[in-house]
Image (cartoon, rainbow, N blue to C red; front, side, top):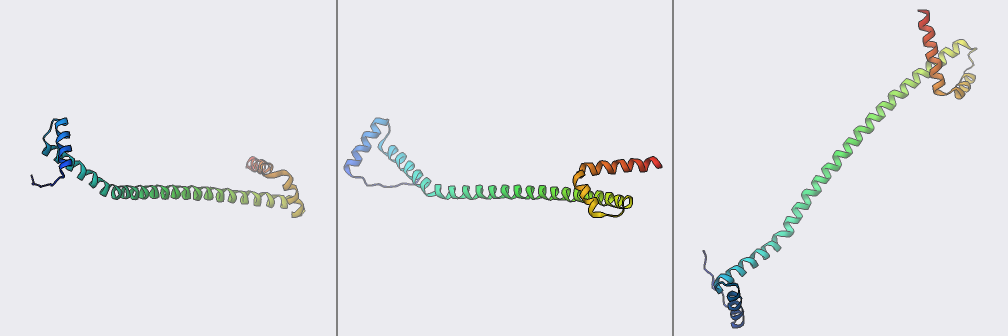
Length: 141
């Protein structure tokens, strides 16, 4: 253990002696304890801000990576939805093309009139007509 000499005012020495007697310690032991506590507190005050900054930076990195992961997940979901929508639109184009082709063959070729009728029938009605035509086609086989 290192040795340290400390000079105290007589008033401080008297207070140290009184506190030591009250605590049942020697004045030297109490002085060592007071110095140790003081040094630890001063050290804590010196290192606490640096520790807080380091913890905050680590937390910010974690939150940033979690946010990026959520953004990538959302991008993947949007891409998946866009692909499904694209596939549905392709199906609609095929269906509309087939219906128009069949309707043009059966009618006098008046496309504007057929489109006007399709506006009133709607998609579900058109799909029902297509299903009926498919059933008729399979019935002939």
